[in-house]
Figure: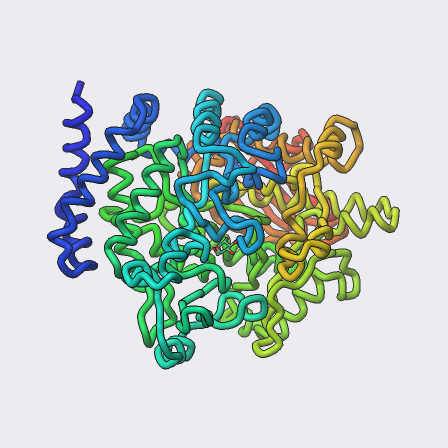
Length: 618
Ligand code: GLC
């Protein structure tokens, strides 16, 4: 048995040269500061509990531990779900009942009451927001989760701090040392140059990338909201302190760190200030640092961009960066398919993702706390006479119910008249038409919408990687329009899908025939099937088939003798998948035995046809 110290040293030695090299490349005079960084790592390692160290070692022995078919995630707001961290602990039984073994707790660190961007404006990285609990509550929650084999994910908002963070306050008070941790300018000259090449994240709710501070007579860089001040990672103190905060949080038992808005953390004049090479160096350094101090911890990169920008965040086999990334293009393409009822782009997208190395782990999802941005493959769509601006208009009209035949109840987000761009908000259930059908008392419409909701969840569960549910979706929670009455939320339509969890409605999951029960039992059943069959492993080969019907998608997964033929009908009426696959199959969802030839698929229906190798042997 290696002593703790020997273990630390062997992990450090493995990465020492590369870490030092990258650090010195990034920071002038880095040689001098580097020993202090290493010292910090040792302190955080020494502080790490023996339970967490044990978990680290187990995971080091089994580095693919998160690549199975047994991980199902759910993201939730602590206050909306259970008031506070202690409350979440009490609700772990429900989480387990949902088939979920990984919870992503939305930002819970200290942030101002009003200007907080849903917690993404952190004012103290060492403290939990008072009304949500304490760091001890967090440690107790993660310990209880670990006892129940549940992983905990949290956001690490590293691009910026709140203007109420101590550094920001001291910068505002005129302390140069703290101003150097942000980007301050006396005149608009340099900001103007940045604005020329740097696009906007929130063009309508927070236009521009800089904010004028009248008291200080200076501009400060604020890529997101004016109260979120961008940190300057060119300053080694910023890097070192933020790394220390991160390690402090992992020492509280957090298993997965979601690196929020990571592409933005390095800025350079004359560029778009996104995905610069230094960003990758920093992520790589963070990966090595975690492997030294807390190798059981995973990094989830939040890169909401086109595939060519996303994939580099996995790094290379020798020099990995993030363990997991969001499958954002597939998510947007799924909703595009709901509106167009034409699966050709989704088929193509499935093929593109399936061709990537199977070591890559994607987080698959339908909805999250953010808007849906229409980041589709427009070059390809153009070849089919679909133009970007017109198409975005169509999608937004469709999902806000303004298109003939649409029952969707979404809301626009950051509608930018200049570019014709707008994004979209709403819960899965409301986007699928459940809200409108319930209002109309239209039972046929309701059946169709529930079927669509289930089919979309089934599609997420068919993909390789980790399915991540959005809390409330498991019981078909509808949009919550209450935010419009709250001043701090009213202009941010993302709050329409961030409503309080309806525990009363959740009770109806046990009432046969209710919307809640149909969704809850349908989704959990699919999760169980997914966990029971190796064909859903990340390692499976995935391909698509032509179905002869533009509304029906066919995905085939094959692994160790198992073959799954998955069919998804995006049309609101029954269709036939004109496929022809050898063998006899069992539909894992309906229990039917059938041949995979000219298969009927119900309106908005899904089929999971499984062939066992043995059924082929006569
Ligand atoms: C991420 C979050 C988003 C937030 C932004 C700024 O994109 O998902 O909710 O507004 O970062 O922190």
